Image (cartoon, rainbow, N blue to C red):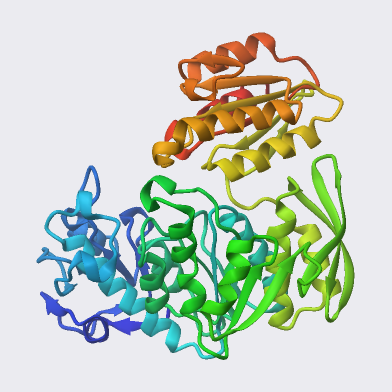
Length: 466
């Protein structure tokens, strides 16, 4: 971010100075005191266990130029004005009974919007979808970096804290700002897009992630489409032509529409798709020409993610050959997403335990089947969260998919809903079973929603064989 004084922060956010002269300079924004350095602006946010307001003085002692707070603190600060939850779409209501966190997040959004508006040469690219957002964000960073300085979020920084925090990392040399837009209810994406408006909006798919919160796939589609509704008439909507719910969003935007996918009507499409050891190869076809792509990412589902990234890069000055080269060189960049490790004993462990929904489960199982062709395959699956009343049926359907794909062994970890294979109570039970029965050459997929904590199992499988 461009350097600002606390007085300027107060003016932009509508806050008031507290115990501050106003000329204190800030050059970065952080919500973790461990990351604070000279010139940092510390965000005082309430959490489940601690309240950031209690660490304001420590942040200033560590070099912070000031604090953005929701109430008075013992440090030079800007006190954000009160704001209603309805106005912010805040996700913090359960840990923010006094609204201090909501005030800080609303102020942070205003600050991010102001900072990005001051960067006219920076193209803001927003990505949303029920699954694949983070992988696509990483591919976007890979294809856009050769075209100019690119800022993208680390991991899944995609809510009302992570998105503006990422936006504030952009500076005067930044040419591309990639932002991930998530939602747990109607209006969340619209609020994020209002704070930091995108020039290009990418919608990957509409699935059943958060179905329990939205109530229907139609409601999910309505929420995801808020991203393209936020685009100006001179913007670009990159839509997946292979997903009817996404393709239909073209009528919801004034922006120019670019379709991607295998569909013959797609402007940027994949032809001659084949899998080699679980990794996709295809011909990238675009109006500007064709080029061959050999992805290093595991799973055929990454073809759609790669096409979305390619479409954006081509709009921002890339060539088919250059984009294909960048896609082919891209390595997995975010942890616990189809993260593949070859053990010394020949066992392959695929850690896809960051999160799960029925669609990503099927994609991961398909990748396992391809990767494990000619080998014994294990699907170690934990519970899928946030499915609402359809949870039991969705788990059973995933188990049937695993059987249909020829997965040899299904291990359900604390999730008897799968109703197939072998049930174990917890991570320790799964680890004991696998240590006893894995043999050289086996391929193991570990996948569940984040709350299941199966990344610990994947780590133990990898570390225990070294």
